Length: 143
Image (tube, rainbow, N blue to C red; front, side, top):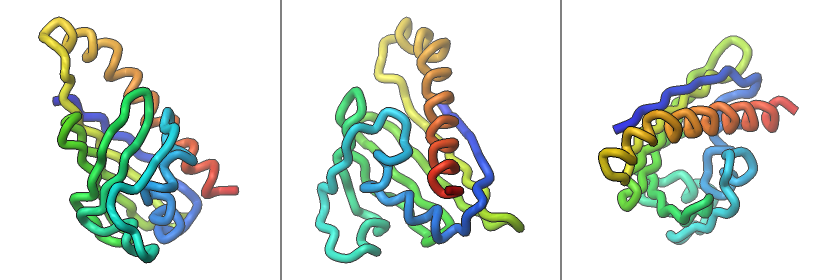
């Protein structure tokens, strides 16, 4: 399993950062996300953050993610069973805003040779994508 960990400090309160972690806001700042559509029913705004809420996300592939952990303004975790990926965001208040940390775990679906190539190139691409996404989030929230 590959693990990528990145963090950034954003001059915005945890509540504002939290709003951007809903699936329907991901395409605004997540690098490579083209579209997001809820697969589960969302009747009120808080439903977007409930454990069990799911969405179809289109990137270069289509992924189905489900929220598996949700602590308002503190932590949210999404999981894609089919693609064996888990992404968690943790929010910690700071004197000037919020420290946002992401942990992205995934298992390469490739053969042994493919896993070696992924470890060399794919992981670097994923790390840069996570960094760029956090910078995009910071730019949006600090406007």
